[in-house]
Image 1 (cartoon, rainbow, N blue to C red):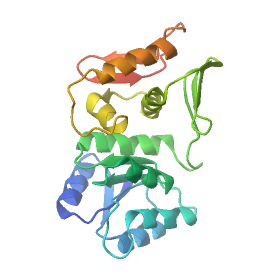
Image 2 (image 1 turned 180 degrees about the vertical axis):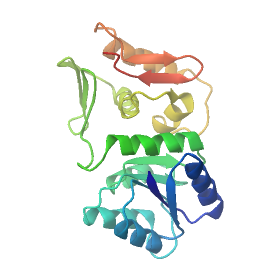
Image 3 (image 1 turned 45 degrees about the vertical axis):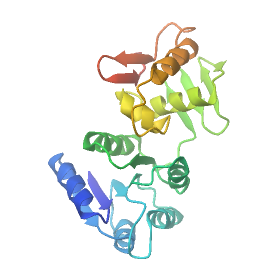
Length: 226
């Protein structure tokens, strides 16, 4: 893949560039928003890794909004120290396809970028997620399996959405704490286990084949084995 990294922090940029190149990707770097916008708009990339806070008079949000206004649908992963829920929501509403907060594990960054390019975002932001006979409508906030409606609490919906967005991938405890509960530390509680158990009662128990699987010593995976 050909990837553009727009990041002003030299240490972070160097770390990401080195890792992506070692993984076999062709990588270009822009150190400010103005250069990043020029490169993103004038050259073809398979994915863009974009910081929120950038020098050059153009921050990450403005850069992405400009690209989307030009019908540039290159998948974009925000990589930012701005970790509040409102920050992530603004990034996604501006046209971002995913949002990873700093500090981060490179393995997760790589997995997310590769997942974005596999999904292919040329049709625009997805409003429906499907895994097997499980369907989630992100606009109406409804979930069905095999045509039967499943009633979920808001946290259960968010947990299932996260699992569906990462279908076929191992989702770790840390990923769930950050992505669903907005914790950037481990509170040493069984909150994840409790909510996954409740979700299984609704999503898996009434149906012949389970979708939510435990991956020993790693986390969970939502997958359709059929």
